[in-house]
Each structure stands twice: as C-alpha cells, then as structure tokens.
Image (cartoon, rainbow, N blue to C red; front, side, top):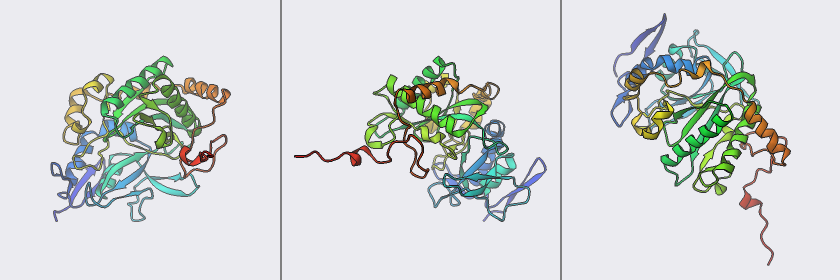
Length: 337
C-alpha cells in the first residue's frame, strides 16, 4: 500500500490513505485522482454544496464494489468536522456531514465516498428550502434525446411563469433542473409546487412527459419526479462524481450546451478543463433567487378543481388529501362475468 498523502487545506490537515487505490476502472483513476478533481472544481462545488448537509454514498473498494449510504458521521471523526442534525420521515435523527469547506469533502472522499447526495437547505436554517429541484427521470425506452426535449419543455414553461431554471446532468441517464428560491418556503410548499409543475407539463406534453407516480402508468415517457422535493429527500450533488467505472460527473451546463452534450463524456478527467475554459454556467443563479408563487398558484388551482395531492413515497406518513397508496392495477376490482 502506498504511503498516505497529507493535505493542508487552509490550515486543516486531511490525510488521504491508500492514495493509489484504483476507484474508477475504466481509465484507472485513483483515490488521489478523485481528490485532485475536487480540488480543481472546489470553487463552484462549494458555491453549490457549501453549508448543506450531505448524505454519503460510500464505495471503499471503488466504483462497482460493495457500497452503502451513510447518513451518520462516524464517532471516530476528527473534532474539527462540522455536522448537523437531520431528520428522517419517521422522525429519527442523525448527525450528518456538512459541506463546510473542501477539507470536509475530502475527509469523506478518503472514506471512499463516491457520491454526495445533498439536502435542499443550509444547516443553519433547515426549515427553509432554497432550491426547487426538477428531476427528469427517463422511463424504460426513453433516450437521452427524450430527456433533453423534456428539459427544454420544462424550461419554456417555467420561463412563461417568470421563473429561471438551470440545468445539469445527473451523471447517469437523466437531467436535473434547479430553480434557486428566495428563503421563504418550506419543503411541503416546494413539493406542492413540484407536483403542480409535473402535472402542468404532462397536460402540455402528454406523449413526452408524465407526472404519474406508479410505474405501470408512465409508459415510455419522462417522469417528473416531484417527490425528490419531499421533506428530507436528497439529490445527487452538482459537480459530484458518480460511482460509475467511467467516473461520470453530475455537471452543470449552460442551456446552449445542452443540444450537443454527451453525458458519459463528462467525467472527472474532462470536467476540470471544461470548467477552466467555459467558467461556471451556474454562476448567475446564486444572485438571482426566484419566487415560488407562480407554481403555488397552479397548485391551489389544481386543488380547487378537485385534484387530490399526488402520492407520497411509502416511507412517509399518510398525508392529508393523499390518494390511496396502491397501484391502480391492484386497486381495480375484477370485472364480473
């Protein structure tokens, strides 16, 4: 095993053990290569993640090996590490890592963290959600071109409402749209807005986009996963490297880049140079917080028209005005002969 590499990060020392351990088999990138990647993108990474709680996806043997999600910071963590209490839907609590600075991120990387899933609030104000996250999830049979079309459709609709959205790859098959929000609304309101958006997009593009929670009703359409905005849900972080053999990155894009982008080509080997050449495409987002009211007005209109709330994930307590949590095919009674 190679000797540890000790980094001095603004006065905080972080030791990287086994720096030559291969984490990404496709090109042979190591743990130290992953560290160097995060150092290269530290500016926009911390602008996006800074001060937020992180759910760690640990792969100590590298991408493709044994893995687990770790919400609780180990008791052996160094005393300088910042944590915050997060709560699950059933009310249990955990001390989660906070992305306070680059030292915190690289401490987690040293543990084999190959994925950071980010809460939509800052540790100091957990009651306020400041990001609407639109998760465009392709159903089986939907190509990336279909997801791309859905992203432009969502952007067009949000623009009509006076809301400015920003786009990133997920590091996998989908796309995420982010709307930076004024610090005014809680997670229940943000989820209600996401439900209204998903339903409006389905009405406008019924063959391309679906808001249906049950997979049997989605068909070959792009699902707008509104429940990614449910309380305590996390989304894979911008600029973060996925635990895939190719080391794909969830990469923020400018809208004009989206037509020609090939997500699998955005990796820890290519993204730093891209950032240096093009700059941070999300730089303007942080000084341009948006109002959620246009989508909340749509939500109120849907409810006034008799629509129930959309289904919640099964781990959540039953919610007011929620339909039965049973797949439509199982709810149907057999036809009498």
